[in-house]
Image (tube, helix red, strand yellow):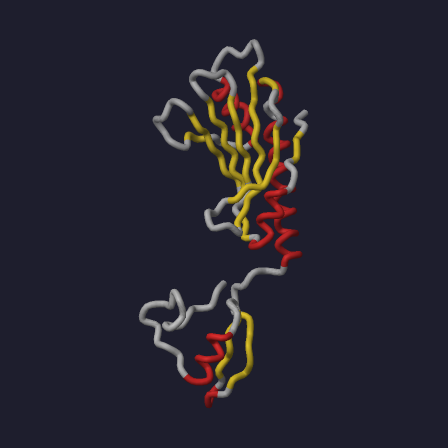
Length: 201
């Protein structure tokens, strides 16, 4: 979190009074995320970090690892239920991607494609819905009334499962994603990680 800027700073908040004197001067010299505390009688107690600042890098990385592990576990469970419907001909890949235009936020997701078995008699998307529903994944249309592509979605906890089917294609594509995480400067390193190929059995 960045501290509120004073009126005389670039981007200062309109209507915020200029802070003159010792306290105002000290605040203008502090780095973002740090402020000074003023005690009764105008005494300065020293610089303190503002609440809401970024968590330590080790804690952020541990949270990211936990999220990735959870998404992979859910993906293996969901996709293993679909092996009787067809095959995963293209690689099923787990990767980090950005989820905010200004950076600092990422999510882990697993993407791939399910091709139907030769004997499939009805649309594969319908069979996916019927197969996953008993396991608690109630896939619903993301945009009701849209017929091509049809995108179906189910959310459980912080994991989102989507399948999309196309009128001109027999296969469905899927995206299983976790939550959007605040990771700050670690976003570049996470997104640079090599993707993980899942073997679905």
